[in-house]
Length: 114
Length: 114
Image (tube, rainbow over all chains, first blue to last red; front, top):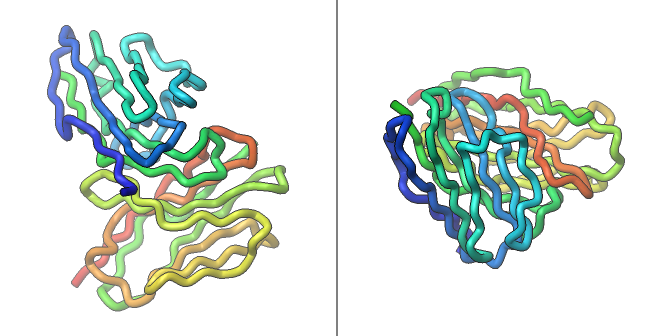
C-alpha cells in the first residue's frame, strides 16, 4: 500500500474560521511533510516531521500549525488565514527524512480562503 | 546551492508522438539523487523514478525512459508513443545525500492531444 490519504479534498473557509487538514499513511514511513502549491508553481516545503518531531519549519506564519499525533497521522491546523493562503496543500511521506528516499504524496486539499 | 531547471514551460504533442522533457541540475555535491514526479489534474504527485549520482545507466519502464548524463548535468525524460493520459505537469527534483529538502524544478506542462 503506497497511499497517502488526505482529507478533505476541498475546503472553503472564511478568514475567521478554524479548520484542520488531515493526512494519513500506513507505509511505516518515519518522515511526513506538508507542502503548499500555488497554481502553475512547484510545491513549496512548509514543515517536516521526523519520528513525530518537528524537524523543519520553513518560516511558515503561525496561522499554520502542524501536529503529528502519531507516526501515521499528520494534521495542519488553520486559523485566521488570508486569501493569499488559497492553494493546494499536499502531504507527503518518506521512509526517512533524508532526500535520498522517494516521497509519496497525497492528492492534496484544495483550500480557498474567502 | 542546488538548482533544477526545466526550461520547457509547456509542450503540446499529438497522440503517439514521442516527447522529451528536459531537466538540468546544479549541485556541488558528489552524491545526490534525481527524481521525476508526474502531477495529473487530480493533484497528486506520482513518483516515477529515483536515480542516484553514481548510476548513469539509462532506464526504461514501458513507454518511459530516462537519460542521465553527468557530463551535462542533465536527467531527461522521454515518453514514447504519448497518450492522452500522459497529459500532466512533470517535475524534476534534486535531493542530497544528507539533505532533507527536495529542490524542485518549475515543472513542464505536457498536453497530449488526440
